[in-house]
Image 1 (spheres, rainbow, N blue to C red):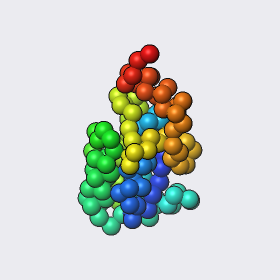
Image 2: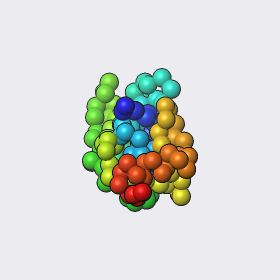
Image 3: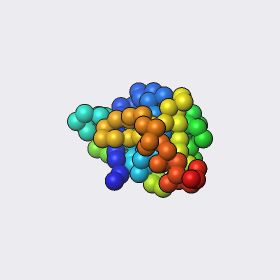
Image 4: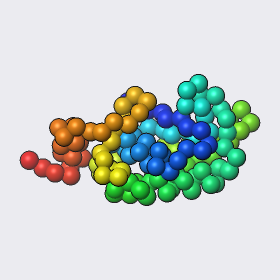
Length: 128
């Protein structure tokens, strides 16, 4: 099941990195930057190119680095919103700052040892 994360324009690179890793270790999803996390109201981003740069920085903080489609700049309700797509079925298990995260609901949670092992096996990273 796909998931959508929403952030305001001032979202930090580390917050983006943990969300991208969590989505990559789940079933993929979408990150919308310039949309209120709570109510979903469009707020926009003043500099979409700068926000896209933060997305690339965040993807490079993942281990291994995430290779994602280029963020799309969309116009919603007259404001610019940056859409980041994390495809399902990525080939690796990803970590950020030594933590293996998964997106569950509206947040990222650490993978348990059992779930991490299952994910590693399902993605072909280890075999038994």
